[in-house]
Length: 212
View 1 (cartoon, rainbow, N blue to C red):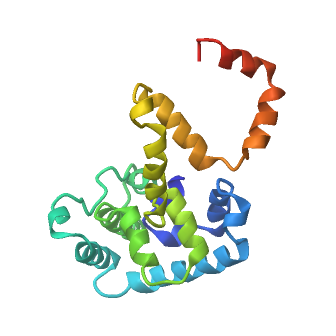
View 2 (view 1 turned 30 degrees about the horizontal axis):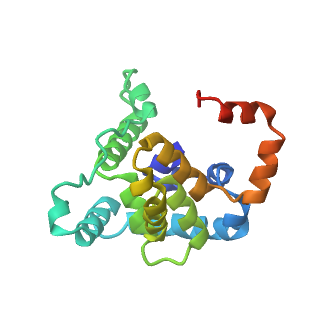
């Protein structure tokens, strides 16, 4: 979802957020609540951008204050892979002495400089910090693959104790990985899965064969 890599939150429109929601289950996010959350955070971004020496320094200060001492040197505060705005480059292809072009170029290069000095995930973490925007928070967590708690990871390790024990230590890692994915990501009951297999003769043949 490239829209969440956009540093200038003001450029993001509601239709972009709606498109991202198509990748998430409907019952996870309220559209009305998400609309209110998005407008609130967007307004917050616009206000903060004009205060305290710009949004970049605010995000950098926030990230450094929340990282452990050992991780501060490891975590880059800017996104070195950020692309420049093509609109700025296009303007530079023409020789013009007009003040409008000069102002446009100056604005573009200022935005480029700021965009290269901040990471999008850090920006969203800063904007969401301390805010009650549950619907937007769920969407951002989904986009950046951020677990809402360590409960999911603990469940994975709990399953691993039974999937790869002393009696099953010859299983290949790919098989264990496949079992984990099924256990963690499916809501299908054992009875429903059994009935599904009975109706899939081709799948049953593959299960019985040695070529899996």
